[in-house]
Length: 353
Ligand SMILES: Cc1ncc(COP(=O)(O)O)c(C=O)c1O
Image (cartoon, helix red, strand yellow):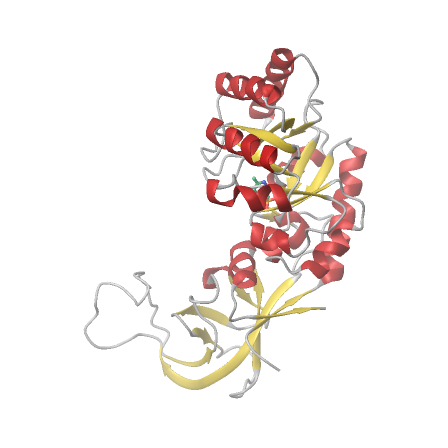
């Protein structure tokens, strides 16, 4: 057995995939599963695709290479770099685009490969990550329509990722307006208006998305059953599918306050505050910031507190927890950040249950 390792409850993820698909169908919205946090481990990605989705979204061509043969549309959700155009056209069916230069590079490379390539143009709705205002969106749509090797599939928007902006009646109406403006400019209906991600599930479940929205791209809800930005579980989805386990390598009773002269920061440039609780029983576990986002871990066992960690150690207070021994394993639930970083870490084994 090798530790640390992430355990993935595939049944929970597949149950979520089916529930999302069903909820989408009830509201006439297509769901695009976003599998970037699966880091290209294709066994589960293939099982998700088999449930009958039209598109799969991922953030990395390295991941997509592992399932490029799948008979489902593969979309790169992060705008492509110019240096990856040949692989982009070779491995994927479409990408989200917000720059004229990238559209023209896609046209050139798709032409070289004698193929046609789908794009969704991204609209800025206030979250301040990728996306164009309405005027630029319309200009790019007209340009895309004129490019022989580019197929304008639709428009998209992303919320709740950078600026913590929630989807609501106002920005969804703005999205519908942008879709209408693009459709008027190009004289045809768009096949896809992709209105957001998992943070739109509350509006989806309540039937509040405007009719113009046809698609949502869902990652965190699919894998963890959570609605991001609200940071709440969806009661119709399953949580806790990703846990990380590692070995305990030291158990000692120590004071809860460090002693000696304090410097300005820890080994990762951060600061930690300490509470004086007297002597506490502490366990060190073999996992750290070099491998995973440790702030996203929650101990699975009752009474265990994760105090913090450094590059390669987790420090836990186990005074009120189980009677662990050195060599026992200790497990933690992963939130999105821990899952996404841990799954991409070469130092953590992955075990699909
Ligand atoms: C463009 C885009 N769409 C959709 C998603 C999925 O977001 P979420 O995991 O919140 O559903 C992401 C983030 O992973 C993204 O960057």
